[in-house]
Amino acid sequence: MEFPTDENLLVGLTRADDAGVYRVTDDLALIQTVDFFTPIVDDPYWFGQIAAANALSDVYAMGGVPKTAMNLVAFPIKEMDISILRQVIQGGLDKMKEAGVVLVGGHSVEDKELKYGLSVTGFIHPDRILVKRNLRAGDSLILTKPLGSGIINTAIKGGLASPEIIETVTQLMARLNRIPAEVMPGYSVHACTDITGFGLLGHLTEMVQGSGCSVRLDATAIPVLPETRDYAAMGLVPAGAYANQEFFAPHVRFAPSVDAVLQNILFDPQTSGGLLICIQPDQAEPFLAELTERGVLDAAVIGEVLPGPTEEIVVS
Image (cartoon, rainbow, N blue to C red; front, side, top):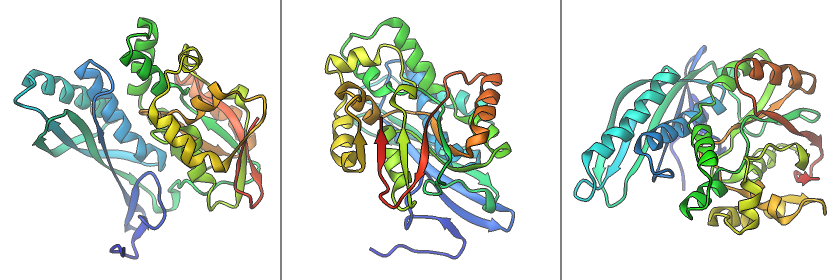
């Protein structure tokens, strides 16, 4: 299949990434992305918040600043009260205001199932685009949010999650990746992606393939949400985690110390997960310190980039 192209298309379909980037001038490029999904929490307002944060995240992952958005809505008007839609949209609007984003329009259709999300446009300098595969040997890897939202949401659907973890995971998914994105320009960050449906190891595989590098992860350093391991041990693992494992496992080598429960967590599909940042090693701790000063308390160095054409991920 042949796709239309243009010399100003800097990131497109020939190299899969978090968003497309189109150069407008020598100093300005547009980042474009779109994302929407079905509810993953019961509260309509929080669903709107989470869906908006998730869509905005791709712009942050490219190193850009989101500027405008358009609503994407599918709604079962004959089966669901319109007040629910108002709450969803209000949640999205409040998250856009927090991000400094202007809503410029949107589109809605009648559907059997509620869906909501955004099409987002952001700005970036053409020379400062962060792509997935620009890993550099010796760099440190930083993850800005803990893992486990897919497993926790499965426990919520089964009526087994505690009220405390429900509130924690809801707040986490609704949290913008804005602060890490604002901090990154002050440091030597070479590559970035956000952790969503393919899980940590799936998205990391996308970074490693074609990079000429491998990665070593420290399993003990990876932040995980409370109660996640308990629910995973009970078998409350979403189907997406098993699909991710089947697809991406050939690129991953686990040490014997990494048990099956933790492996499931590392493949767990995340909703509105954190950024995975490749940074010059001597700048990792100052970067984390600045995140802490600005209220991002759960980021951590989880591994390092290694030289080597094998392009594999080693978890030990």
